[in-house]
Image 1 (tube, rainbow, N blue to C red):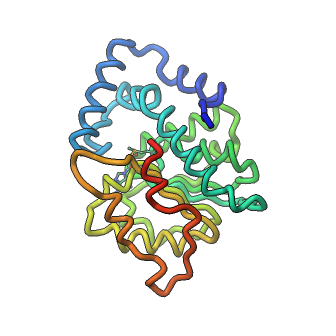
Image 2: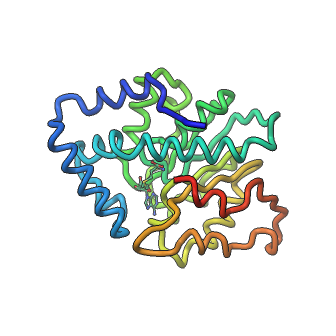
Length: 229
Ligand SMILES: C[S@@+](CC[C@H](N)C(=O)[O-])C[C@H]1O[C@@H](n2cnc3c(N)ncnc32)[C@H](O)[C@@H]1O
């Protein structure tokens, strides 16, 4: 199954990039890919509007497709799932929210968390310009996840896409467990299969939810999520 970006989102991205030189965007996109390959974080890769435009044009369509694929596999055994609330952690420009809204149109209460204010504003702008009221009106929580996570309210669906690799490895186990508690019905991680810098997805596999005092059911084996990029 393929998951192309909705036309309205494509147009909103074109509008965001309007007036910027295509050559500059291509240059920023190449530099960003190199930064991610070297394991550098988004915060060092994205500094200006041209960097965000490069992310929207060069990376978002692929992370949107991978997140849509992961969500649709996770939703297969839950045909009656009609969630209203979503927490999108390390949301960036709202990629996972966009994917979730396309698959789960009952979603109406969105909370987007990110350390980068400009990316959160971009997510809201994309929502506004593509007519997605739930995204345009989402609650935006600006801050590092470690600082804001205690204040987050539970949601039926909790998603984190392409971000675990950016968090300090030592924090991951606690964070994953807290996210599990935050999710009332479904928790989905989407990660690149491999990163030159680390083996973090394998760390996630080692967080044994079932052995803790939590009743967890893995809808899809973690290995299946890891090959979606
Ligand atoms: C590669 S982007 C992924 C964005 C989006 N989820 C996607 O799939 O396109 C990683 C995001 O994580 C955010 N981030 C990294 N470390 C963070 C932290 N400690 N707390 C909150 N956000 C963080 C960055 O600002 C960036 O927006």
